[in-house]
Image 1: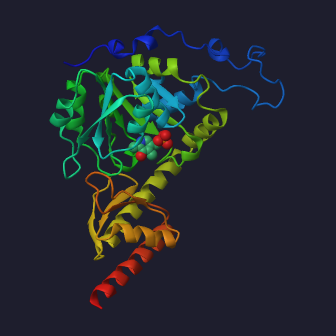
Image 2 (image 1 turned 120 degrees about the vertical axis):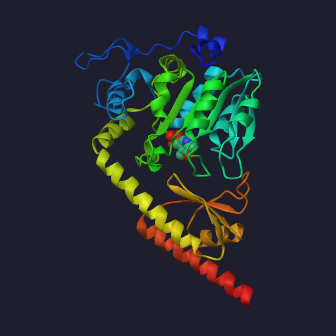
Length: 355
Ligand SMILES: *Cc1c(COP(=O)(O)O)cnc(C)c1O
């Protein structure tokens, strides 16, 4: 039942929509006198609106990823792509999306803002995916399935064959959020993109690239889907400064690779140090730049760390994550200091027990 055409899934009002045409859509050169957009002629280069389709940046991303520029959408963080996908495909008050549970919170928040229902499918106890369970939870109003691999907060890659089975059998759009893929040591699901019309991959500059502050994320998908996203986005959604800085960062890709390598080394050291402590029940296998760790007393450890001005993420209220804190890998120094504090807390709890 592989999908060959997604146009039928687009909301009718979006199909009919005549998009805002921005002043720069008709001209892509850079030697013209620009008197079309009511910009201030002074204060170059900040006086000019950015390229609405980010052509230069997309070309560079295309060069390093092998994805054709036609198959790239850039947005104000991948969060923008999540929101636009829901608005393009889900009719408010009627349609729903399917998410795995636990997962990244923005899929649900964006859906609810748009009055789109959310169906949650619990992961297996080992955080793996049950494709049958995901597919059978779909109704005829289910328009998008959001998968996240490596998943946040569980930190594991989903199995490639499980993801592909869902893409091939679901009668709708399947989004695979690969925000953490650089830390996984795999290429992710990208090699399968050309064969699937209903598949969207999300990537971001916020994690491995170290650019969370510039808000730049991307969607990779069939041209039909990219076209819809471009049609409904704000015309100038990625500002000039972000485009410029991303271009510079891509030229220094070796630096990114160095950061990733160091984070992975530190992740393994941190995991091994934590495993030795009595208060640690489980350090889950991680394919990302964070560790999910089950402690015997997560809440009091969390409070203790906060007193020491070390902020980690309390995930103990999240499905399948009772007693768990999520710890982002920091610099070598930060990691050592965190471990010191956790060790102190561990020894205090041990002494309390003995006395
Ligand atoms: C951090 C994160 C993102 C990044 O979102 P941006 O808007 O690009 O910063 C996306 N997905 C997941 C699962 C994340 O954890």
